[in-house]
Each structure stands twice: as C-alpha cells, then as structure tokens.
Image (spheres, rainbow, N blue to C red):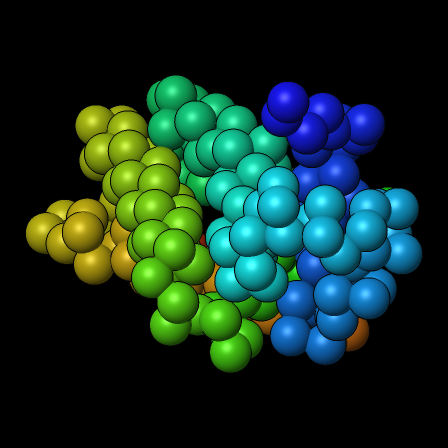
Amino acid sequence: MPDVKHFDPDVALDQVVRLFWERGADVTGIAEVTQATGLSRSSLYATFGGKERLQAAALRRYLERQSRPVFDALAADERGLPAVTGFFERLVAARCTGEHARWGCLVTNTHTGAAREAPEVRQVLDAHHAALRAAMRAALEAARHRDQVRPGMDLEAGAETLALLAYGVNLRSRAGADAAELMAGVRAVLDGFTRTEER
C-alpha cells in the first residue's frame, strides 16, 4: 500500500521559498528546513529530493508566483519607457520596504550561490533571465513605436542592460542600499535611452 502524505507539498514548498528567500539557501541547512516546514527529513527527501532539487523547486515556484506576473504585466504595458520606470519604482519599493524588505530576489541571490551550477537550478536561472529580458525588450519596442528612445538604439542590448540593472537593484537593496540612490541610478540609465530633441 503506497505511503499517504499527511501534509500539503504546496504549502511546504511555499515555506521553503520564504526560508531560502529571506535567509539564503547556501546558509540554510536541512535541519532548518525541517523545522520551518514541520516535515521529517525522510518526508522532505521523499517529496522533493535532495537540497539541490528542493532549491530548484523553490526557484520554479518563485519564478511562477513572484516573477512571471510582473514580467507579463510589463510586456503587456504599451506605455514604453514610463512602463519601465514604473517597473523599477515598484521593484525598488518592494526591495526596500514592506514584508520582504532587504530580502533581495530569490533568483538573483541564487546567481551568487553554490548551487548555481546545478543543472536544474541553472535551468531556472536561465528561464528567469529570458523572461525578464523579453519583458524589457517588449517595453522597449513599445517605446520605439512611441518615438521615446534615441535613434538607432540596439533594443537587444538595451533589454540586456535593463535586466542587469534589475539584478543590481536586487543585490544592492539586500545589502541595505538607499531607495532614493537606487532610483537615481535607474533614472540615469533610462535617461541614456531617452530620445532628446535636437537643438
């Protein structure tokens, strides 16, 4: 007779996401995971596998619940550069204030962690980057359509720059950077993208 789980794996995974996001997966041991979830080590391994597989599952959950809705909203926003500015304003606010202040981004944090080379983890990191970059590219396409960006701008390079800027905001905010300074940096980058009237 198969073993019947007496817990909700989705709830447990959400608890793991929160733990890894706040503390960092590298410094969080399995004992802390079992304490946070209330699961035994054997139940944890039977459901999610080892720590790398658990981390990959947590990253996938974060990508689907936290990142994709934001990326999809940006890609669908046709305002152009104001949409990009709004994206960064909300990002800085979320990273510097509120429930998850100074936690950074779980995916961005993982780029600096030991598990980044694990194939399952790397797959999620690459998927996150592709989705972020595609959303930025869509916003820049809208900006070009509205004649907001400087002539001849390379939209692929611009989208990559904005993705890297988002990672920088995530990491610096986790380190305690001031929100106003972060937004000043964002605006300086966007000023370089913006079309100026010829004099």
